[in-house]
Image (cartoon, rainbow, N blue to C red; front, side):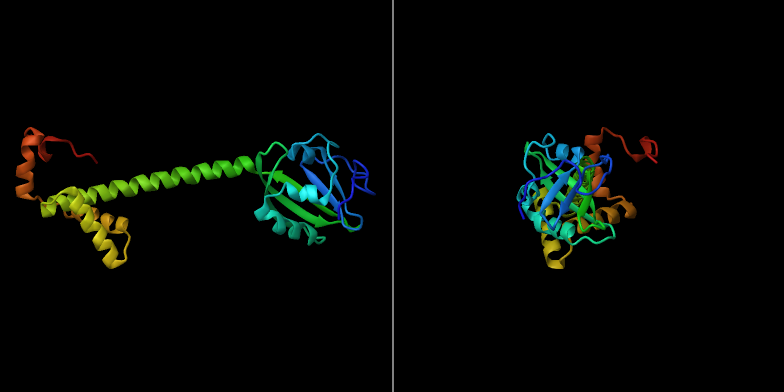
Length: 215
């Protein structure tokens, strides 16, 4: 399927250069055409290299290569969406969305959109959300560990061991058990006289009646 490019415009078509990257492949003779934007996306100056099927696919991530080629080569006259990762001539990775179609003359065309920035932003958002969720989970577990330590009069590490054992025996996540313990204690709101008395020296005589309602 490898052939050299024969012209810098689509074969048999007189159309203006598209604003978004566009590629065109003619199965009958194996020729390729890239718009200036498509050349730039791949990290080349227009005409800098000879376009062949092998070169075009070499830029596509190996894990996406077969799927992308199947999407493009199997396109019909109805627009077909596709998505793939690629590396440009400088080695930078791009995430690309595409709309493929087969033209009346049998050629295959695809309009491409570089969505790398969007993917990066979404990845950053998800990472931040995961970090926040992880921090919240750890905080809840620490609270439950402290409550168990106080309730049973054991060191914090033993309180955590109790949590872990309960999680394994019940097949319920450690975080879920911790959340249940914390919620139960908070909503129960029962004064534990012995514990309150033991903590008073550390609070310098300050008690709940000495502070405003945080709500």
